[in-house]
Image (cartoon, rainbow, N blue to C red):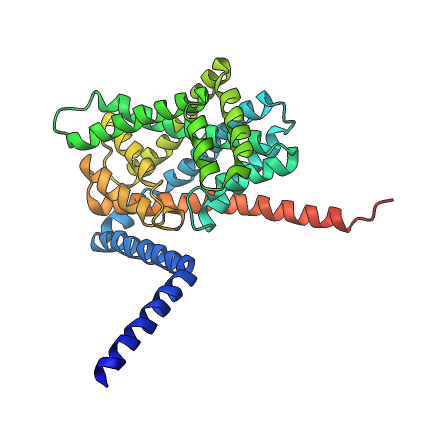
Amino acid sequence: MTDSFTPQFDTNQRPSILTWIKRHRSGLLLWGRLIIAFALMAFVVSLVLRDQDKLRSVNWTLIPFAWLLMLVSTAIKAYRWGLLIHQSHMDLPFRRLLGSYLVGAFFSTVLPTSVGGDAVRAVDTAASTGRVADSTSSVLIERGIGLLSVIGAGSLFALFLESGQVPLAFVLMIHALFVAGIVVLIVLRQGWFMGPIAALMRRVRLGKYVSKVNHLQAAFSSHLKQPGVLGAMLLLSIAANALTMGATYLVLVAVTNPIGVGAFVPMIALTTAAELIPISPASLGVKESAYVFFLGLAGVGSGSAGVIAIIMRGLTWGHALLGGLVFLSRTVQSTQDEATPVP
């Protein structure tokens, strides 16, 4: 009787568990990401609590200036994005683009992904212009060039680091990331591999999406074949990244004795790259742990790095709050417009 019962339990029980996991997969992933975020944040907070004198001795008068630098950097990024928007003859004013950039920052903070704000910007632009491919391409290229300029700065400064100051593996990593970014832009510009990709999509019964992918590739190619625009975007990226890094360096000065800029820039570049790892909502905990780890390599104590990370998170939330207010204002205005009777 036991022999006949046991196989029946295994046969029925295992499929039910697998079915339950598949049914609740998205929820389980979200909870897993939240657990990782809170665990990493708890680790960083514990470092700060262990060395509370660092928190008490912060020069708080410098923090508003750091936030102002971040805000000016965002305005420059919005203008940078506008170069691609106007190149595609999409008529959107700078005020609208800046508002969308801030709203994107808000959704990047509240959505369970670090790139959610970019999707919001693409959707908002497409809704305003009716140009889905051009809108999506402009957002992705703007974000990509911005990230590439950060990694490029880190790669450049890493060339002048003293031997042994930072482990060679991380120096090689930042050089590899920069080269990989250049290769991706070249591939998108030339449209290589689109034929095999289209064939693969048809083979897996996704042929109805091939035309959309082709339109997106055409938009990529068009945006990336204007050297004058790309050069202007690169200069604006350097300015925006200098302001953002300047804000972080200002927070570092407010917390502890400053380190050399030559070591600081590569570590911040690697921290920025770490934010792209999608294992927690809005990189919560991941970004803070990256600050502790990479600034630690440059000689910043773990307690001080933890305080810097928490202050930078607070500045990011303040930035997102401004975007939330813009989003609320747009929502109220849209509701009022819909309620107004058409004469």
